Image (tube, rainbow, N blue to C red; front, top):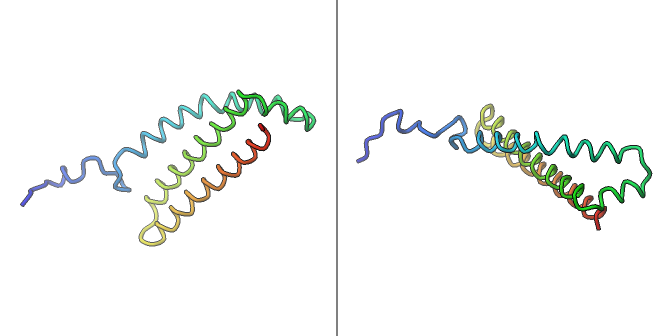
Length: 123
């Protein structure tokens, strides 16, 4: 029979019982977004107010398309992880499971819609 102290059972487990994985992911994605978002806002701002052809030409270039794709992916994963952490802290039982599934599904739907639109513009 194994003897575990309360401290040994608690090491590496947060409120959602997944340790610090979520926290580190949120920190890394926040730093990535801190660099990506200003670049994307500049690209988007330069295209804002121009005609349809100019906007299509802007996002058809590789760099703006790649930055837009990265912003979509990183921001939606950041949203999903953050929503999951919040839901795990405040909900219980089947409600928690349903809300986590809904938040992750929403992030994937937004990501897929954004990628579809980006591919349609870029190609």
